Amino acid sequence: MQKRCLRRATPTLGTTEVQITPILMGTWQAGKRMWVGIEDADSIKTI
Image: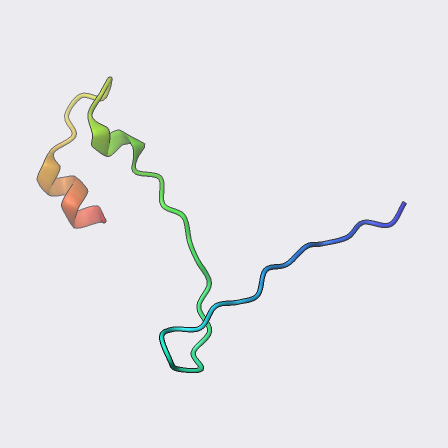
């Protein structure tokens, strides 16, 4: 069986030709529900 890799087109930045790739950042702990010691200022700095 041959595997196929589906690839999305790489988006460009605005009207430039600079190619960008999306990244994902988990921020579930910033919601503070069930997490202790998470300060808003620290979450804002991280993001």
